[in-house]
Length: 248
Image (cartoon, helix red, strand yellow):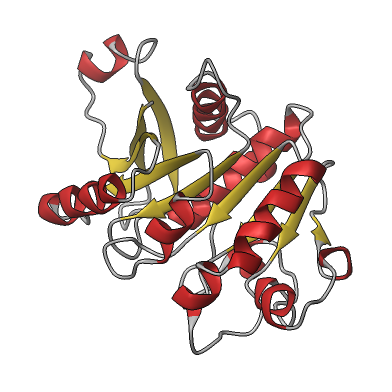
């Protein structure tokens, strides 16, 4: 499994970092009547970039002066700890099952003032039951008093119900899809699952859309599109271009 990339820390002046800052702004202005203080990040299938999105949104939120908590709620295939090179021996499962104080588990992200991270912890036999428990709901409510923003990185909603369950106890949900990997029917099914639990869908992040050399995408840049570069090089030695599209 690939390690999620913290673009916004490694190269804060890059176009991909600017894309995440635009996404941050869209989230902040997505609700007029009620401030968004907690969000679920999920996807339709595995490998669409939900963890990378969760991490980089959290970093940009913290960089704007907010106190942010990023929680690894993927209790099946956790990855946040690899991105921050932190131990995952203790995490969310210890808080929910072992009644441990979150202050004894939270990790202060290096190089990002105001960003705290809680990994998944040991993988439990009953992830959905834990995430749907009163303890989880109470934990989120408690964290609302401590943080300006809570971001939950959850498993793909098309595979398991964890993301749908958590979407009922947060202020908003973001669905991450990727061109060339997401099946349109799986994406529709993911949205339907969120609709069935009355999730507040803030928008969709569309990843890995190839950019041509024409002017169409550039024309729309100022309106809806954010451009980014994939960090890996192609066999020819050229970097492949990607764009991120945000509906919010």
